[in-house]
Length: 412
Image 1: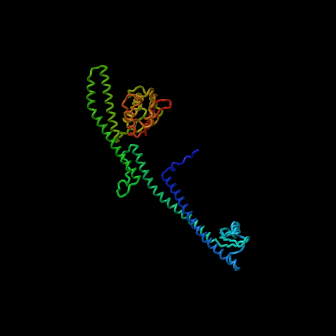
Image 2: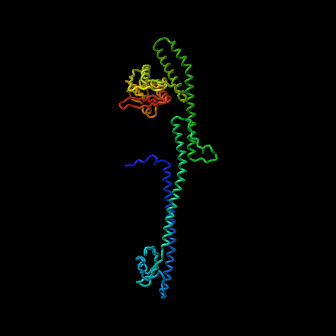
């Protein structure tokens, strides 16, 4: 079973702190071991040379029949057994061992086949020196690690703060704010060398500018096309009205009406794209407004269910446009019965057809993309979503578990 780590554990700052800590600890341990081994070898070597020198002098004095001196004796009782066995075997050697409660440097050598001559030197001062050195290494390593962590945390925090700012701007751009820019100081100051974060920020700003330019060009093109189509369509509509009655005339008038609707929808989308639409707020009872929308729709019969009425402050014309488009889309692309439900500030429109396609539920409506090859210009839901955003409402699209498309409008 894998344990779920907290979200902060995967951040760059935490990973950098862990990496710095591990590297500092490894480096401090390596340097500490090297210093400890070097100083210990030097200290032990000096004490060993001193003990062997005294052993040589004591051996010479013993052979000459003189007094061996202080700390020198035959078969001393505290001599380690390993060192005694080495001396009996005819070799000289040294060893550090506890004797009388204190560390002692022993040196021993053979006298004859059964006796050994031992030299003991107090090793307490050297042992205290090595212990003090070990404590100094631990304290200095701890201070070095702490200082490195503070400096590293400061440096990493500056980088992560810039990365968070860049990510926030990216989210704003993704949400539709194409005026958002990172404006990293390193991208504007030629005296400061740019780093990787500045390169990412500059690329994001360049991408946002390019995207904004392309969208503005598209919006201008859409508005210009719609305006240019208006004049000939007005004349075409007038000419269609003069045609004699009959089936061909009805077909011509129907297509002209569809073209006029498409042109008006394009103009409406171009206005929504500018982001300059302003609402005219008024107090409206939702149930009455829903009944009025259903009566004015020509798509087919729609049932209105009022679970709980509510009075909201909204723009009546825009709200009627949203609900009217949702109802018309339900009749056009779904199957009956179509039900419009008012439950407080939440209005749902549901049909009992095949439901919304996957792309629409996941990403929202897309212009001129229709469901399953069905006919239509595919702008109704796009306009409904745009008008809902102007109202400050939330429009969501989903599919019912037992079949059918469900559009949910939540008003403020």
